[in-house]
Amino acid sequence: MSENESPNNTRLVLITGLSGSGKSSVAKCFEDLGYFTVDNLPLPLLRLFLEDTHSLAEGKDRIAVVTDIRAPGFASQFPDLVRSIDRTKTSLTLLFLKASDEALVRRFSETRRPHPLAGTGSAIEGIRKERALLAELRGEADLIIDTSEYSIHQARRLIYREFTDSAEEEPSMVVSVVSFGFKFGIPQGTDLLFDVRFLPNPHFVPGLREQTGVDEQVQEFLEGHDEFGALLAHLQGFLEFLLPRYRRENRSYVTVAIGCTGGKHRSVASTERIAAALDEAGWTVRVQHRDISR
Image 1 (tube, helix red, strand yellow):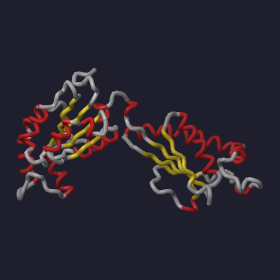
Image 2 (tube, rainbow, N blue to C red):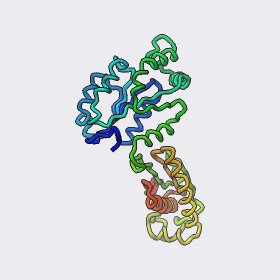
Image 3 (tube, one colour):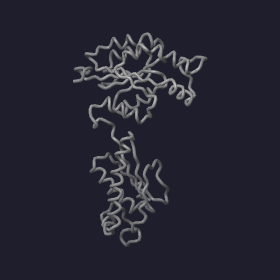
Image 4 (cartoon, rainbow, N blue to C red):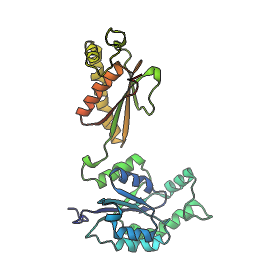
């Protein structure tokens, strides 16, 4: 049991910090980890929520709450609210996000949104005012993350590392393997595209035209040609190299599209074999034969 872990195993993360430091992006990371996530409740409602998190969070035992200077009275009232939480009943982490003045000014310029404390002044004036108001709260944080130089992928990796007990808890990446026919167009959202039209075409073999690549006779026909086995071996090896690296970048989905002329024989058989190999290797795989019935 960790230092802050409570006997009832309710884990609460309060996410706060400077405007523009990435709180909304971090909240999405917690959603991906299965946390019940609440964003920007007014302080009176937040107080009620924290008094009865179990029922209001629909029985979830992992909860993330985003709150910041947008809530009236935040700077003066929120520190006392944090102190009032019984850490013997709740495993609480106060997560504070910060960033440099330069990074925050750049982000407000890029989004063209005004700083909530700037009023008629400049963004840097609002940033400095907020930094001073939140100095006390920052001092009480359990974890401070400086997002000045972080991409969203780097931030996700850090959140996953800090708030998961094992790699198995991290959201899995879904690999969609799609067969298709080039004459009907390339599937939307394709990340990796492979053309298998060089394989012998069962369409021109008597008795195979009306069958598809999921049928045993079509697969046996393709297996009778050395290039089919070589193709599968090369594709499998290539994907074994690529997919862990996509996963390292915290991708949620990767779509592998395998195409032949009509999307009925060669691409279907190839998709079936590649999907089976990926499944056996432990990936979460979805199979779609887009054009098999055309």
